[in-house]
Length: 368
Figure 1 (spheres, rainbow, N blue to C red):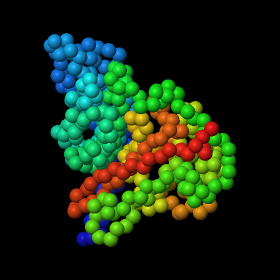
Figure 2 (tube, rainbow, N blue to C red):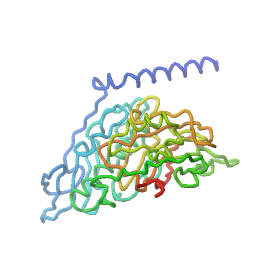
Figure 3 (cartoon, helix red, strand yellow):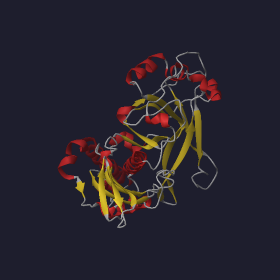
Figure 4 (spheres, one colour):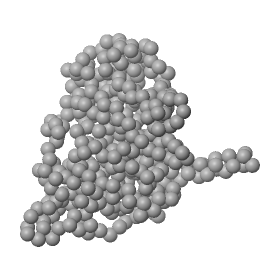
C-alpha cells in the first residue's frame, strides 16, 4: 500500500511538472481571468481627473483626496508564474495610504491548488490602510494565509502593488526617492583591482554577509538547529567575484551584465533558497531584493547556477548561484540594499511562510 501511495504521488507530481512546463503555451486559451472595475472601487471620490499614468480623485468640495492607478501602466515588466503581469487597480490617499485595491486581470494557475477569487481578494485587502512607504514584505507584514502555496504569485503581487504606488507617489509629488541619485543613473563604478582573497578574508572585509535562521527563529520546538545559512555578496568587483566564481565563470557572468546592471552571489551552506518557482514557474518566490523602496524579483533567465566555490577555505555549498539584477528600475550596487528570503515550513501540521532579511552594503574597499 505504501509503495502504491508513493507511485501515486510521483504520478501526480509528474502531471504538475508537465502542466507547468507547457503552461506558458496553453495559458492564453483557458486560464485568463478578468474582473469588471471602476475607479471608485479603489478610492472614494466625486470626480476623477486623468493624468499621465494615473487619476487624481477629488471630493465634492473640490479637494484632492488621492490617486488611482492601473499597475500595468507602471510595472508591466513584473510577471507572475504564467509569465504575465498581475494587472491591479490601486487607490491611495495624499499621504500614501492605500485606500482600495482590486485585481483586474491575471493568468495565474492558482485554482489548481484550491485558491478561489474570494481568497485572492482577502489577500489583497491586507494592503488597505497601510502606508506604501512602510516595509510591506510577504511572510512578515503581509501574510499568505489566504493563498497558502502561491508564493510566486504573492511575491510578484507585492512587488506590483508597491512598485506601482511608490512610483506614482513620486510622480504626484507626495513623496521623494530616498536617494534622488537612484531616480537618475546608478553608480556602477566598482573597483577593477584584483587581489587574491580567501573566504575568511571576504567575510572579514564585509564583501560576503551571512544570515543564519535557526529552528528557534521559526518557532519550532526541540533542540535548536540551523535551518538556513545564507551568504550574499555583490560579485562585479573582481576581488570578490573572481575569487568566488573562478576566472572563467566570472568572465562569462560579466558578459551577461549590461551597462547599468549588477549581479549578486547567493549561496546556502545549509538549507535551500530556490523554492518550487525555480523548478517549474521560472520565477523565484523565495528571493527578492529591495533598495530605496524598489523591489526586484528574479526569473530563471536572470540566474546562473554555481556548482563550485573557488575562494580558499570556502564551505561546501548546498545551493549557490548568481542573480543578475536587470529590469526597468535602476539598482545601485554601491548603495545599501536588503535581500529577503521567504522560508516555507510546517508547524503543527500547518504550512507557514516567514521572511527574513539580510542587509548588505558593498564595502568602500571595492568601490572606485
